[in-house]
Image (cartoon, rainbow, N blue to C red):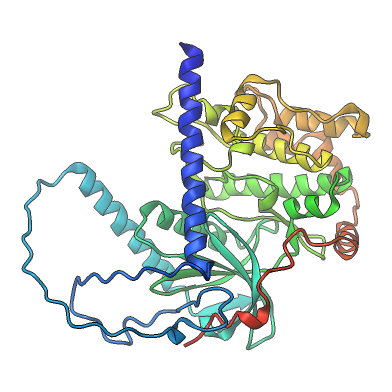
Length: 433
């Protein structure tokens, strides 16, 4: 019975992860696929607003080289509006709660809107509009949106801009707000990607951020092998400090620590990004169950003692960090040969935790640190204050490592893992008035 119950839990979690992936792919396809026409739904809720009120940034379909305003128009005969009959439904607590959450989300967005209209770069404040940015190409995309490389025309600064679609989906809007909230408040942490400002339109939310070089996931693919221990030592210092800062300063757990959310650049900086599924800690514990990525999920998140009351803390992110370090140090994901999320989740629960191989020359300190991170019983797994005292982390807080030189050499002698058929800047006239 216990095995059957566990299989049911894993199946439900796998289904949730698949659903999130399908939704993300569908959003991306709708946003960037030139083959799929975008459906237009007209819903009349109130008198038609004036043009100035409904002005919003319009992005063309990717790779078409034109703005949406270039699309051919179709004339239709006026529609006959039939009288509508309204049913009187009893008000439920669920609807009241949902309405209150929607109001709260809208209020928070309105607060953030007050902070839009300018960029702060290198301590200098510039009045700015979304049309002041020139699109230089796509950097990447994920469940929360797309990231573009852009040039601020007024100063020439090249920055990264994360675009997230506003929708009626409450969960998506909560992700947008969480991402915005964390990056706006984390301006005083050198290990978190810095936010220069935001732009909010009727259709999109844009977060302007510092431009980093690439992520650890793409570096691993470029190298097609292990990343040196010394580089990973500096990476560990940066990420543990970033996570500790989020917990102590803002009461936030990241919940999506993985190589693709660890960024590096040619100056040797290492920073954490992507806070869309971060969660608030209540009494130092997370009370909500956001899925995240199955491959890096801690055992206590996969199979909580009480599924109706998710109850885990920042040590879930410590596990995710350990899995990421094993992957980057060996060049291979530790739970390999798995065809489905279900297989990965099952291995996490049933197999012994991964370790760093003894035949690859890793120092005993590094092996010890990873072993601590991957302690299966989360009650025995160390929290950030203990990790910060670990000799491995202490060593790389003070050891000089030329991350910048290593990064520049890797980027110079390896090819990008991204396809050469990416959109060219010439085809990205995305921003039109």
